[in-house]
Structures are given as C-alpha cells and as structure tokens.
Length: 106
Image (cartoon, rainbow, N blue to C red; front, side, top):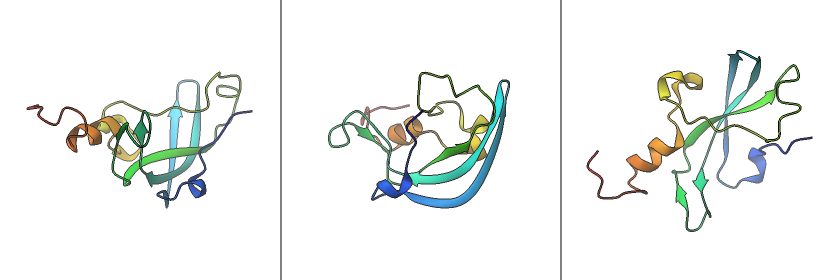
C-alpha cells in the first residue's frame, strides 16, 4: 500500500478541521485541510514555505484510480482558483516570500 502524510508526525503541522471534497474525471476524494511547512529539497537548505502553507490531505479515495498508482500522493501546483477551496499553491508562497529569486521583479 501507499505511504500517507501524518500531520501528527510533524512538529509544525496543524489540522484545521476543514473538510474538502473533490470530483475528478476518474473518481473523487475527501479529506481535511492542514497547515504545515512545505519544502522542496532538503528542509534545512531547500526552498520552503512558511509553516502556514495550507494543503488538502486525502483520507478517502473510493474506486481503483489511486490503488494501482505508482505514487503516494499529488501536490497540486495549479492556479489557486482551481485548487481545493482556492488554497494558494506552495510555489507561489515561496516566490512571494522571496525564498527563490529574492531580487525578482515579477
């Protein structure tokens, strides 16, 4: 089976208690929204969001769409307007916090 994100295993994770539900072409999923620090690369030297990055954690994916998948999860990188509850995606927060390209003018 697949590994799952465990909010209680992170010292910076907070479960907001906010439920979500998404319909996809191949199925659906439900779960809760949490807030935590998200890093790309090493947590000590990689690019990180603040600890307040919200993201959806699925705990119910009926059907077979994800059972046979060769991955443990999906981190959405689309526009905020099409995300679960319009949550801002991690790369936007990293750019906005100037963790990447601190002198960027865009």
